[in-house]
Length: 68
Image (tube, rainbow, N blue to C red; front, side, top):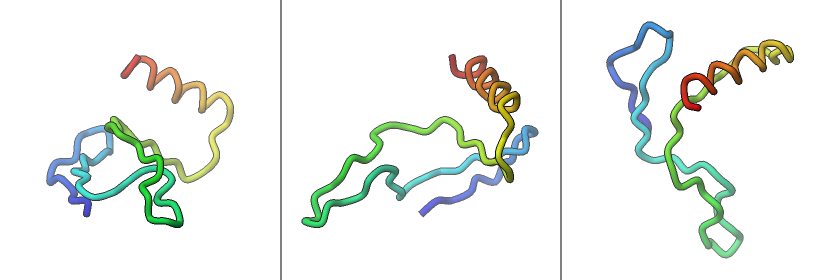
């Protein structure tokens, strides 16, 4: 279950406290756990359309500056 934090920052993003989702392949047919992400996701970017190559480059530069 994810719960939304009450504060939204000026970048038009919302902080989410994720307490119950798995990211990865899921389980095998025998119920054995699959290859789930073990770690944290710092940021998720969603767009309402496909980005042009130039826009993808700008997003890459943004992420490099922020997290690189």
